Image 1 (spheres, rainbow, N blue to C red):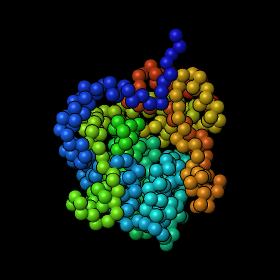
Image 2: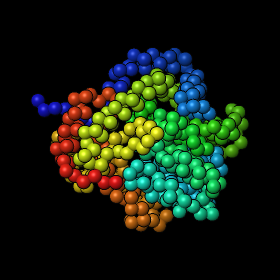
Image 3: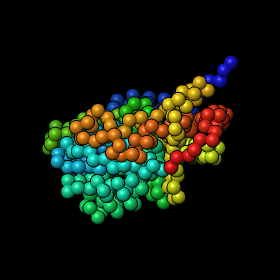
Image 4: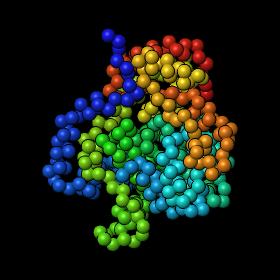
Length: 374
């Protein structure tokens, strides 16, 4: 019998390990009859804030809403520009557009896939109001340099931490550097719910209070509305599930890091592997290599029973939705090159050692002798 396909991600394994705990948590919510902004949401907000090292946390419907409401609470709006990376998921720029601002792209560092601080400085104009760095694939963006730029230019910073809960720089967790940060609990994330969910985190009390009001139709008191808000509340059932999972997060991260380091040791002489900078803690939401002839080689890996994924095949400045911004191919060479070369390998805490070995051998068989990039 042929070996089973090794998936890029298998959420069922984690569920089976926690099935009894999750069932008890869900049953507790159902028995309580309290489904919106209940005690599990409040407790999860406190627990996530404590995990990150302090501040205020506000549960929301999604990571996208967390970005959107962070920008809005910081006063970013029509006529403003927000500098961000073109190499990320579209939710990053959707949030900018939702507040009426304009995304302005700055190219990435070819070695890390994260926004390049030098490109940020070159993109600042009199209309720039904020910087929105993304900690892509779980790898921290260079926050010390970004915060220094923001301080000199008087700009707000919103961290997109959707893929990177638990990542850190010098022991300081990402999400605690900027004025606000957005986390996603989409099921595939390192801390994933069983549906949509997100959270805003900030050290600024007034930002948290504004977002609490905005998430509940623009009112701090029920049936009293101060401004046009949204309906963006983290579901009580999802919060209960996330509370079961949160105590396991560090163990899962360390397992991801062990798998990643095994991949790196075995493959670094064959292909370009992820860079983990000194004093940075990469949490490997994805383990992403880069190589020429990516699509054909991904197809060949599939034949060998190894699942892969491309995050992301088209950079945002070349997406149809952003055509009105006037960007053209060639404007951001590093992001465009990465989009044509990145390939993510199977990465989840429950991957078995034998599966990991099969991935390594499959990659070696295809890419032996390939020239590393970056």
